[in-house]
Image (cartoon, rainbow, N blue to C red; front, side, top):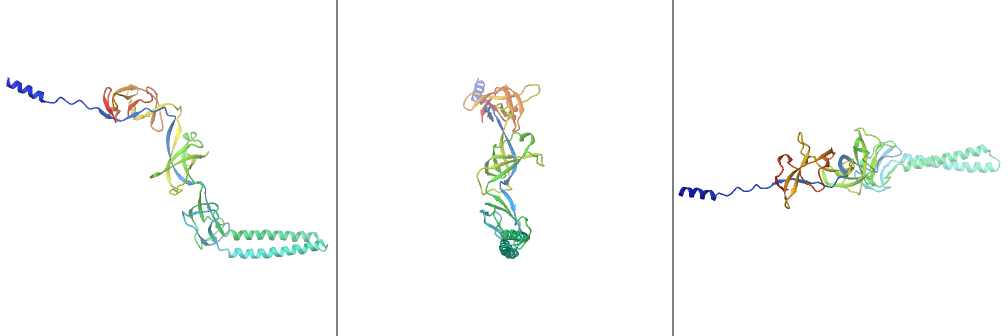
Length: 338
């Protein structure tokens, strides 16, 4: 009797098994039917206004007053050539023009007095006009010995050096204008038709999440580039001296969905088993953060470029779905929404 009582007492002293705790699960909420999807394209910053400039005449550089990265205003001097030879040519042209003017005046008086022929007067007049043109050309050559900023902007590169002999038209300085920067991307042929002027893009410089900008599409090339994509230009809004032409980055754009207005969910939410129709695990809330899992068959459509799959039927906006570990849960399981 004592033994039996001890056994019963020992059994009653053991605690009952603790109820199974709800399993935490990752979930997503079905959003309103989407009409656009996101695409990301790599690209590079370019100056919207930029060019390489040089002297209109040849000669030896005696002054180069700029450096890379310097910001200058329109009309400021960039470089000068030795103009001594051109000034000598100007002096000769001035002398010849002065002499031709005097000769024209003398011939005119003789012609009016009947002491010179019409051909003599026409010849003197033609010579005066010829020397006048030569004089203007000589003046222009002297002026062309000074290279100035054609517009306000930033010095992108300096190709010349002091004492270097350069030819007419040879690039000495490259300039980036103040009209802002552009971001150029390449868009595949199957998507370029969806890109329109004015389309808004978000641009981020590679390796610098703090350098993000908004831009709009301003140009869509009708010609395919060598990499089989179509160049698309995006103009950045605003200015930032921390960025320069040549920097790489990515542009994020939102393109219209074909047959927009369809509910989409991440592909990892869908369970597809052989011999059965696709389904998702629907979480029916029981309290604020607890719920019971139910199996919800769905009819799916196309897989979108952003990894979302279209759901033709079976879901409604606001439904809560298991988004991770869909093969490790079952119907009726109590879960905690994480």
